[in-house]
Amino acid sequence: MTLSEKELTRYHRQMIISHWGESGQKKLRTSTVFIAGAGGLGSPVAIYLAAAGIGTIRICDYGKPELSNLNRQILHGEQDIGINKAQSANETLQDINPHVTVEPLMSKITEETVGELVGESDIILDCLDNFPTRHILNRHAVQCSIPLIHAGIHGLSGQLTFIHTPETPCLNCIFPGSTPSEIFPVVGVTPGVIGLLEATEAIKWLIGIGKNLKGQLLIWDGEEMLFQKVAVKKDPNCPICKQ
Image (cartoon, rainbow, N blue to C red):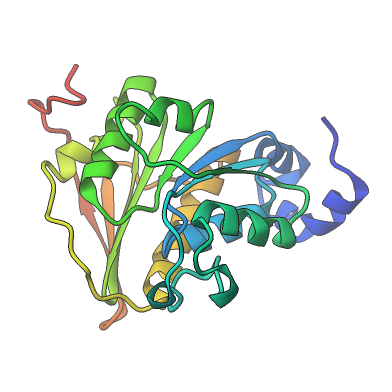
């Protein structure tokens, strides 16, 4: 596989990053990512992965944009209200980078559908807003040894970690159980900050540069503009990932 002259020009500024080069760009070009959710987090994640030149983006969402989503869900505009989010995302991402293949998946993630939806993806990005579905992704990631990047947001704060069992704790080790669904406060900059960090973690892992947040939970406090890392450990009795 060779990069076209257009691609070499388009990605030149990132390919001159240390240890990236043309070989790193080819790795992105041949990668497939699964983005669970095309909302607040999924928007910046998908946009910047597309801009970076990920080969195939499988983006999954069964919902439709509403007016109250548009302060943060930047994949969509008022013209997209009533259209499936994955389909709307496909149109936006194709405009951003026609070199990327987008596979819009207009389905709900369940125990029965998760395998088919994730398919042969190299990495899973959790851009969801509820823990029950996150735990479905986590169980599939553990069973199939697929890395999972978890992210969550609330108001002006967010969190992020890189999960790849058996090397790291799984999501259930860190957040056992599920919290009730709620309409929580959020401003668009919050998923913007956390989503870009999530996309960064994915790009680093796919190319093989830098260090990922393995065994660490990154917490961002936007009101105080503070970042901190908290060590997270495997639960030896975790029913999901214990050996």
